Amino acid sequence: MHSPAGQYPVPLRASTLGQLADTISRPWYDRSRISHGIVHIGVGGFNRSHLAVYLDDLLGSSESNRWGEFGVGLLPHDKLTHSALREQDFLYGLLNVDSNQVRYRIIGSLTGHLYAPESSEEVLEKLCSPDCAIVSMTVTEGGYFIEDASGRFLADHDDVRHDLEHPDHPITWLGYVAEAAHRRMLRGAAPFTLLSCDNLQANGTTARNALLSFGEARNSALRKWMETNISFPNSMVDRITPRTTEENRATIAEKFGVLDLAPVVSESYRQWVLEDNFSAGRPAWELQGAQMTTDVAPYEKTKMRLLNGGHSAIGYAADLLGHRTIADAVGDPLLCELLNRFMAEVRPTLQQLPGVDLDAYSVSIVKRFSNAAIRDQVARICSGGCAKIAKFIVPSLADLLERRASPSVLPFVIASWLHYLRGTDEDGRALIISDPGLEHMQLFLAAGASDARLALSVRPLFGDLAFTHPQLVSAVQSVLDELRSNGVRATLTETLAKVQTR
Ligand code: CS2
Image (cartoon, rainbow, N blue to C red; front, side, top):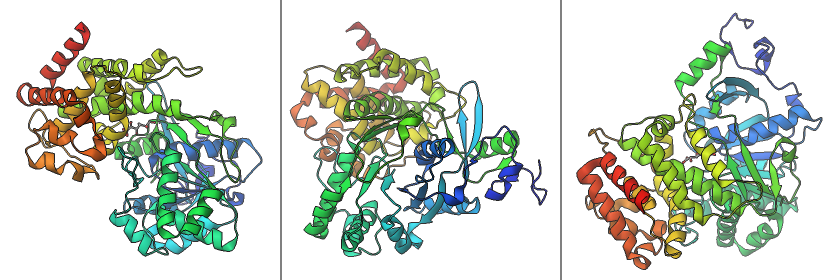
């Protein structure tokens, strides 16, 4: 198994696919005939382990070449992905890592990619092309320019203002999609769908609010066109996708003989529930196991509150305790107990879903988090904390307080995040905090990161909770004080003991 130049591992290219080991599945379909029915903004790991894989499965199992993906990167770090993908003819490998097996396959559904800051005009035209019926995106939980607590559009955000002033050279997804819609409107072109693939409740509706508010700020005719011509299905997406590491690349080279510059790693589990609301057609994703439905909300809520919330619930305590992977974290009996108690506390806020047993779902979350081979990073889970706390934790907390319940695990989770924001772990080592939303917490941090009231009064994250439920402030304050004086383990042990005896 050697490339023409005799190189081993074999550099991944369209021309070297034939040299890969027979056991590696790869696209047999004709990639040169694929049309770009989908233009995706934000081709990070998750897009490449989820949507692009559903598309690859469909292309591999049908005669149709209608639904290929063209990618767009908006952020500085997308430049590296862009260069790597371009060098590989936009091919990349998916490493599926479960506790008992590792599989590697080549994904071919992505057949082009542009780095927008260097090619904005090309990107705009790609978004307007008659082939493009769906603009999909993963721009992270914090990337929607909508304030969590109030649902208000952040019209004053610098990037939004930039895009309103420079419609031909936008920097955000809002600017790109609105300008593409504007050009379509002027050309009398076809409608399209905007499909959000981010973890946020009502992701489609949130994208709609942001885009229509932005459109209105440009001109009302554009807003009206977008309102009439773009559909915004909500969707729930699920597949644990850690950050790809050098170690993953080395495994691919050693075990599978492939030099892959842009591989992505995930568990083999995947789930996708979508509202069947597409303005201009869609791939038959249901043939590959996606659930098409009329109401995604309860699925999103369950996944976000238990799985994403579960990650955040243990993530900050895990980082403070020096655990580096989520499997190490749930391997720590105290954190595993925290996860289970957290899910039990949140469960009353969820309704039963047809065909979903919430007990079994919770058990499956613990099992998925325990996958040691995947080495999912605690640092990944802790990143972007402001948006994650606001979206994954606060809504459950608000619901429970509204029902006059007295949660104690959720106040611990909030306090552990606040304690983590001080920036040192239990052994005095500096923590690396990566959070674009951190400006919200400046007052709290500047005052020594000890006053829970200052944190909980940040309305964009917590709304009115500190004022309507003053007992929440005292509950978080007392855990925060205890964390500072007794440390994470003792405080958590005490918190869990209280829950048990209630
Ligand atoms: C994680 C998610 O970032 C996080 O906090 O909870 O990325 C999670 O791994 C995915 O949503 C799984 O579908």
